[in-house]
Amino acid sequence: MTQLTEEHFQLHDTNKDKRYQEQKIKYLQDRVDVLEKSLGKLQLKVADMVTWIDTKLERKNNAK
Image (cartoon, rainbow, N blue to C red; front, top):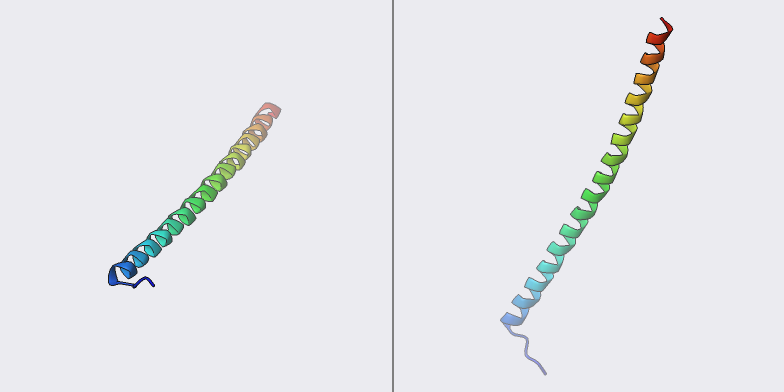
């Protein structure tokens, strides 16, 4: 039977911590991706609104 030494437990803890840190980074990267996607959609909506407002103002000025 293999003896479990202090080095074994240290290695196990190090590997566990490394996996945990990688999971945190992956989660944060996923959140950043979602935020970037949301910002892109908001930018398109704002551009549509600006275009709509410009069109309304142009029609109003042409009616005068």
